Length: 326
Image 1 (tube, rainbow, N blue to C red):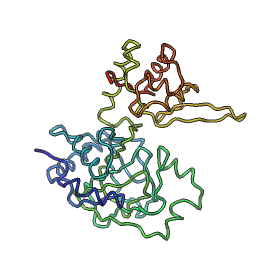
Image 2: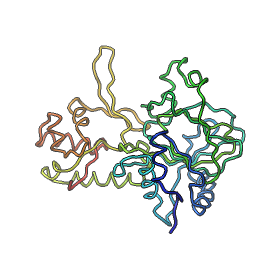
Image 3: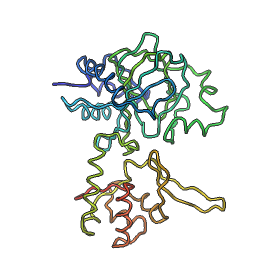
Image 4: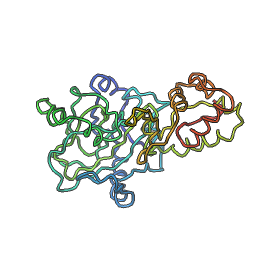
């Protein structure tokens, strides 16, 4: 049977639990690594993400081969190693990352976006001088933003990692072709020393249902399911389970200069979608296994036609996801 990984996931769980990262030497099967290496050049040419050309690094969207269920294997392995809830695990990013031959030797440390609870790095081609550097024990708080650049804009100059981490001993990981690394991507400052010529596949996951880039292979399935629920009669709709839409980047409240609150929902790459205060409270009530009726009750909204009208509007915009027959 074709497999992505060749290790016992449970054996690495204690180390991840205590350290927040694991380095699994030769963690990819030889067969999968050969397949991945062959995919890289094709994907960088055909699936290059122009908007993701960051500094000295090219990125391309990765597609799982269709000769086995590698995606399910990934979810199983990450949930077992990292202690995440398997039933709610989401793949929020799947990018091939290739550093330019003339990339600088010491890129700035960064944290991944909020949706990257766990970063899984599959080493494709790693020159001998290249090293992954983590700071797992200092400043290990979650990046609440959608990118590392947004995070840096909100940090005072004296608090930037190049200032605060200068005297902190880093954790250097000398990975090689075929290795697997898992670490807390949105919490640990990290970088890669001497990255020139390095090629990686990074798969980012979380178990809180956040997929702002819509890169989880099930994204269309989730949307179709919600659209089917919108065709139900009111009584059936009220019984559906409701959650905040996986493609929602964040929910916000902003203030005008006269201090009026303006709630909104933001999707990746677009401006805020206006919602009112009733809808804001309803979004806070969704999730946790609640049905639509239970969410409406928790938000203090009518459970009949008016409240269901709010749910229908939010679901039609992708702000809420519905599961029929819950």
